[in-house]
Length: 102
Image (cartoon, rainbow, N blue to C red; front, side, top):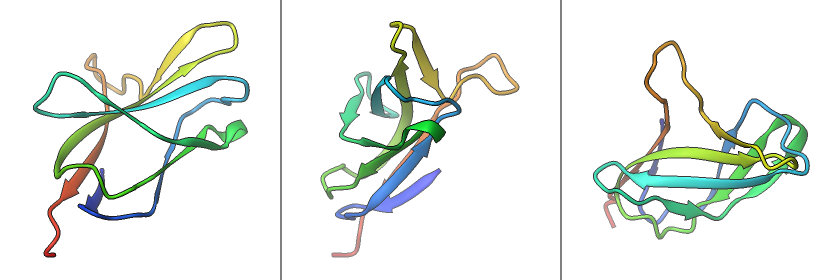
């Protein structure tokens, strides 16, 4: 889980277990209590190692978010990360935005 505070402005990194060279990527964050995800702006910072970076801009409302990366290969095949791990339930990265004192 990544924990940040409302108003934070710095880079956070997600890594997927594939080379994303030539792929299209989407970084999605869905508030736990809501149905529709937000697409977070990001850039691929190390394609060969699957590294993506999102620059926090201070606008995410406080709360808990489920995060996933959607990769579309050059052949058009979708791959979503994280994938299933040791259970039959899909896993998600988690992002928590806390209130700040200011």
